[in-house]
Image (tube, rainbow, N blue to C red):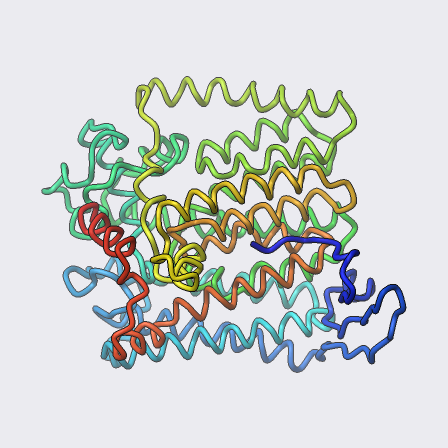
Length: 495
């Protein structure tokens, strides 16, 4: 588990220059030998406006190419499109892209190239952010969002699962926490969705809001949710910009760090995942604490918790942010209670005492989730139940240690706790990285930013389609262990 330790007791330690920490530039660290500093040449990676503009253009071109090929017809890029792929799903760019090559291997390797190219462009933009104007950054962000809005959901069908649970409750009168999508076998959404035998894992507030979508046709519901997701992403970035200004930071770096991450673009926006609806109120709570509006911060955070329960991890760090002011601590708790009571009442009224099904997915494994990788390296059979319990315990210990620290800022500590949580997840999806990127961008810890970038690289590499093809060709299966096979069996049962 990555930890932000001071390393003060080690015989040899690496410490980054404060200038690099404050600017976001990359610099060669100083070497410290038992207190005696040996300065090394500082090699800063700071590119000019031409490189930055070219990288922004490359991101737009890659996104456009990805969308064009995904809308061209049934492809491996869009799950279940070989079974059903109506015009309203493919989008308006289908007329321009119709007839493009759609071979499985060609598109798999093509997506690999796009992800690598976007990762390189992201690195260049990070090195050139000082030379880029806020107008250029915002313009590129808007262009990317408009382009990705035209795409069908990439790689996974979660958007249709959201609609499936919504129609289950709003149209068929069934509780999505006690019934499954398989109960609506004759509903048109069934052909687009997956996880047909999984009770809804989504929070009651998100589920209740999606109940409004089935009031119109499936096509209108689909586009309404897509537009809402893209707007939520823009809202998140606006809050990142606002928080950076509140902390006296240059908002350009924060925007670049979050918005141009290839995972943010391809998997989070391109997949139209509901994590944005969680992150908007959670970052809103951060902004409100920075503005000393503590009661409102506690209330807004509860909205995020009612969408995805994992956001509760931020609450103790909000309390740390205002400590030792007992008045501010009390106000945050009061706001959380005042918002929590009606949210609980709403959940009970709509869903009874049933809760989101977090248990099933928490026991599933992805090939390269950190617990599964650790289990394979240690030779204990991958992500076994015992190892998962140990990882959960380590997260608790890590969070308690971070809360007890006094020297680092609270946003950085919240970021480290979130990163520890991600590294403990057995079911690790790429877009989960966006849980930590805003905290890393706004916090003062350069180590957290480097760790977040390293985790991004890990996710990009392990989810490359070319890697999957390579492993399959050579008969390598990270889920070939008893724990992995049990996970695959459960996954097939739920799907």
